Amino acid sequence: QLLQTHLPDITIKVYSNATLQARIQSFAGAHPGRQLSREVAGPIALAPFYLEDYLGKAIKGVKRLIFIETDTVLLGDVSDLQNLDLQGHALAAAKSCSKRWSDLMNFDELKNMGFFELSPNSCALSRAVIVLDVQRWRRQDVTGKIEEWIARSKTNAVELWKDGSSLVPWLLATGENYAELSEQWACTGLGHDGMTIEESQQIRRSGFDKKSLRRLGLHTDKFGYLAPHLTTCSGSAKL
Image (cartoon, rainbow, N blue to C red; front, top):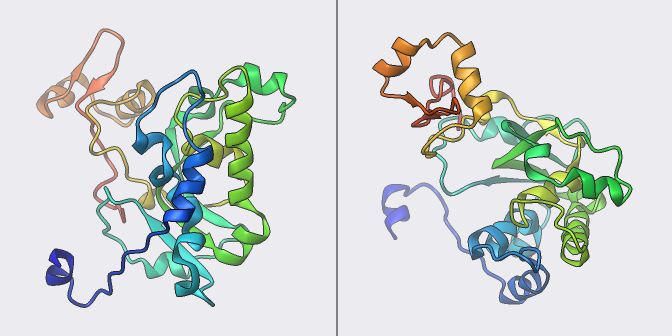
């Protein structure tokens, strides 16, 4: 009711599927040796990869879906994403190079399993906004590949990744097969308390000296991490 009061021209519907959520819960979750929060490892975290299943007949004939995380502020025109050329890919997303694959995955174990083609230096993807081509997503069985990676993780004696069961299997299932959204759709991290070492170094390389950082209220710990989080993308950001 609150949303309809403030957004009277927007049609808002809520979809749920208890059967689907139970099925996801049956195989989702962390490696048996770890305990992670429901938000990280449960059905809600995996929901973006089951949009067609959740929406069902409501999207009959729809060619494209756009997923936007709930903790985002949308500044751009969503029609830009609706009309975006996906270049034959099943999805489009923005890179998030504050995290590399090597930060998230156990590459020694992945190599032991025979996955030598994976690149530790690949940037992670942001799931703040994901554009899906419904037919290509289904045809390429992206959801099925995500489930396969989750199954591998659950049955393997050694953990394959460090970040729950939603982001990493999506990265592995997608690889480089995606259309890249511009940096304007990747202005993320504004709610973080601090910055990664790569983000901190990037801020320094962009021209912020110690005096400027102090004036902005940032401080540096003994390892070189800056806090609180500072972003330089908000001026041109679409999200």
